[in-house]
Picture 1 (spheres, rainbow, N blue to C red):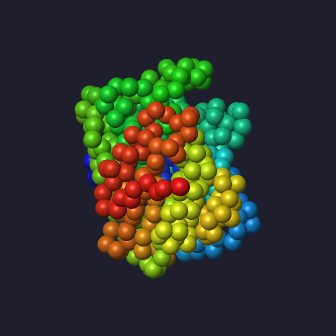
Picture 2 (cartoon, rainbow, N blue to C red):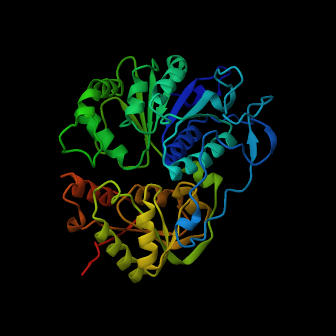
Picture 3 (cartoon, one colour):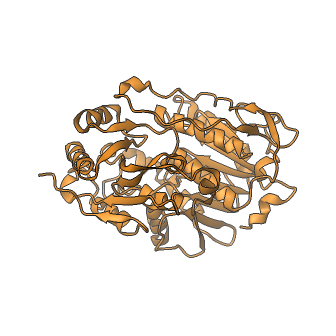
Length: 420
């Protein structure tokens, strides 16, 4: 998979499918490493950015105690290919592949969650600022939306020479893989799930998210099984297909023929910062309660204890954390709840950020040390105590979470806190 492919006069027709802000961030990192950005796409129009069609405004801040929201991304020049015209949806007038951005088109399969949509909207603006095309799809806008989305993308998929995806476990992405004829497939990080994907691919197992593994397949799983099996076969490299995994996560079981490329967040470090560092400590939230892995009361008690022990003042909420849970955290711990408008790697790199960042096992214990390299910020991770797990947690949950912590580099490991 030659980095030079994106620099030739003929666009390489790369399609990237993302469903979360972090996936889009890692597509930008991958494109930066492979040199897909045009050398000089040329500024068009004034400062700021057109809103993405269909993107909802963020929830009102009065749902939570005053959180001192972080400043917005500074206004930037919108860029399109030289001589082109900026469009709100990022598509060229004829609907074909644009020569800008090395032929990269980012397709956002928009979720319904307002916080995720808001962050995706901001990331889409950054992608356009880098010279790439962005196509926003209301992929979950009603019962007929999936049919309209897949039908509208079928032509682009058949012509694509390379497909980049952020979530190989996504049923949407797996359906789209049945259409494409692309010889090059790339999986960019979707957090800790990437570790599980590579391991499952290496062992020839069916693709199942780690927090669901161990349960009995439901009717929808059985109905979708042929599509999932087809996706796994297509993600297995062979004579006609090359597969790359672009990840900042540790990969120990590399499937035969798969190319693993390290994501060191070089685009993030070049684009933002260095940050202003405060004397205090910040905490990173997790959605382990929302996914049914960790008990809510235990989580709240752990946050309270960590905040008191380390002098934490701010809590950066995960985009999937519920409003009710965050309101309770603010009320019972006194923490300032911040709902970031961008992935935390960008927020931390821009600053201000605490000299110590506390986290539970999650993707950020791997990504933040890379994004903040050379700044002197310390990342500390607290293990999940087995007693915090719910009775519905996957049998693999404790081992997987311990592995996330144990394989993290350049972090300070804390023992699990006592809730007594």
